[in-house]
Amino acid sequence: MQYINYRESRQRGTADFPIEYHHVSPTHPQYIMALHWHVEFELIRILSGSLKLTVDEEEYTAKAGSSCFIPAGTIHAGEPDNCVYECLVFDMNVLMNKNDDCCRLIRRVIDHQVELPHHFPDSRAGINRIVWSIFDASASKNEGYQLVVLGAMYQLFGTIFATHDYKPVPEKQTRTHRRILQLKQALEFMESSYNQPITLEEMAESVGMSPKYFCRFFHEMTHRTPVDYLNYYRIERACYQLMTTNLSITDVAYGSGFNDLSYFIKTFKKYKGTTPKKFLR
Image 1 (tube, rainbow, N blue to C red):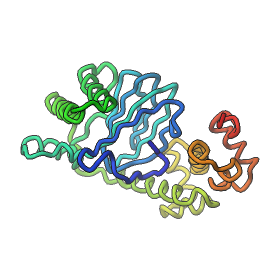
Image 2: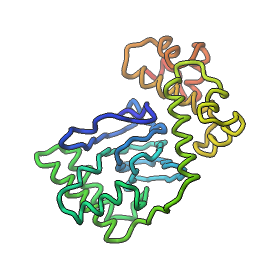
Image 3: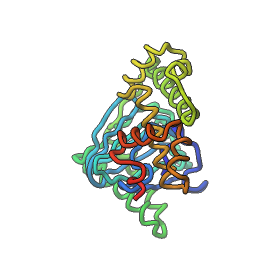
Image 4: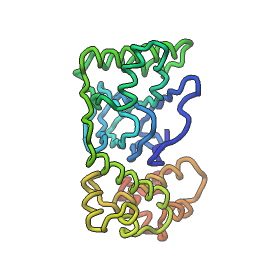
């Protein structure tokens, strides 16, 4: 699983079964879930530790035994704390069959007509039992696991509707929607230009804001300054390259937007608590 691009756009699973399963432990190349979004929906289950999850402008701490639901197109990020977690990224259209009643309910989720909870704590035992069965079947890859996954997904959303565990989406969320779109624009600019020199003025200009207002806006949305997040993203990108390519530390540094090796090492240690050389051991 790679959370490098802010907007992930690729085939999930197969065309016939567009559901993709990932197991993420501390040794995973992208253990920290950087801000990103994708056109599919996502389920996350926490096996151990905790995951500080940001979904649009809301924050949750998901602990072992809990699960999370991420709507399509939603900006989200996760900071694990001694955590092992799993993700299931899926195209909700896989549940759209010829049963009109089922399609009508699933369509309300796909079209964002209803808002489902983003976090199901471990106290939600009934919901989490269903989520666990989805993940267990996905991990097993036993013959017929696809039937188990689809059946459990119907059970999950059926239970949510049966218990009215959702709320209608207000017709107008103009300001919030606009802010999220602006953040996506800023993140796309960083993602496309991180390996080049970028000024604060250029980042602000990418969303039509003054540098001062952009700094305040970005911090409100991400709890980081723009420069801090850019450097954080560059180091995450560098980590991925160090673990998945044979590039030297120097080449990775320059390819990640740093023009000074010593500054790269200093910044790397700030975010990772170790040097690039020790990180590779």
